[in-house]
Image (cartoon, rainbow, N blue to C red; front, side):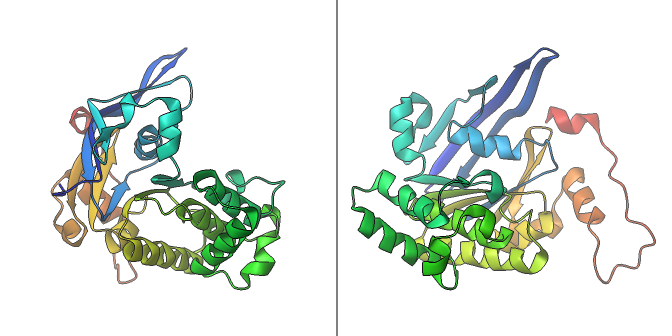
Length: 280
């Protein structure tokens, strides 16, 4: 746990009432995040993305979010009206989604969208917002930002689209960034470039980061702490540097299942499941 947390989440539940019955996506998790990089890792369906969305009130109907506390900078987000939450969402807590193709508006240029993200939270003229957007596009290492400003989302590559999304989320200078698998759709070389950009901007601005991923080794190399989720629960939390000493059998199974260049095993091991893991 951090000594001076930006965000404290206590006993968070996310449930969906469906025709087939109650589905519990997140089941009573608690964690804290300070001005650090926290990785949340788990398989598809473990509840990690729903955790990020629940913090910002973005769980769609028929989802239901309940928690004992979701406190950001001393304020319980559950007590805020939708209007008050919008003042925090984007301006003080931003979220980078998984695939920019589904997050960017196809009928607006990428530059206009970055500038709009700034104008929503700052009362400035269009010309000032444009200059700020160009600065932000340069900050995420886009060459020739003036040209890219006038491109539409379908005209940029996946890696560049993800950089645009990062620029859009960071232009209001938030205190906390939630990155939901921001590199999963990218090839390895572009992936490392995008991670370097996030790391540089988060570190220089003194922000907090929740980095959601299914890649345990990637998170271990990038984050300060790691929380491992299984079946809607956090089964283990540890320092990233001490991940190799993890104790929970699920974490150890994930580590053992990852291929390595120097691996001489004929076959990667499978991960047997223990029903007790889901019960905490």
